[in-house]
Length: 240
Image 1: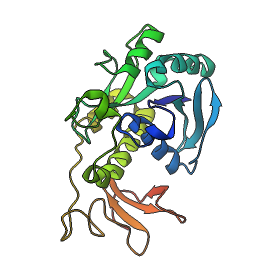
Image 2: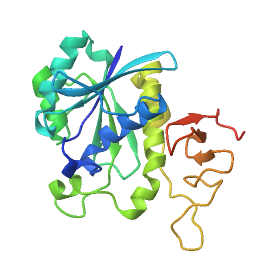
Image 3: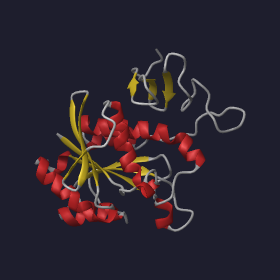
Image 4: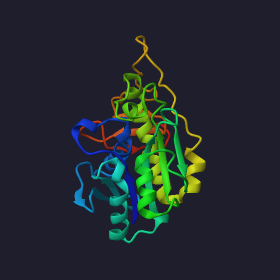
């Protein structure tokens, strides 16, 4: 069992804010496994256990609010008997441009209060984290992380979440070093646009699905399963 913790804040007022992108990434991983929905409450977290592609993952969203994330992570590690090497924390980072991904095997909190709390509770910096770029603040840091994404960012957010979900699964299969080699160089690019300059066309990255239910993402062609925009099935990278 691998433990993946997405950092965020509970409550409708925080839903879809930049600070909650860790939760959004976990939702995308769960969607792909056909396990969308609220997890069960345990260890001060909402936890969803999934099996996908031979992996067993516990996806956890601490319900303690960001600044006390460490208490939930400590309880989860004890409950699941998971060593630090099998823990991945997914968090936002305004020091990274919007759409950048960055794995690290260890390191300081970098000013992130959720990571700070985890380090304090575990008395260790030696756990893997996937930082997801939310863009540099154009205003105060607190206002920025608690704000919602711009219209342009929302248009590209599905591509970013696809890539971040790929990154989480790569970490679970191959470990931090190999996942970092693949995804730390990944860069989100704006999708091609139609005449109004904002909407990608069918067949373009980020565009809508075609008649067979397949749409193109930054990480390959994906088929939308019946019933909505997700979950999606990887068609193997090539167009089918």
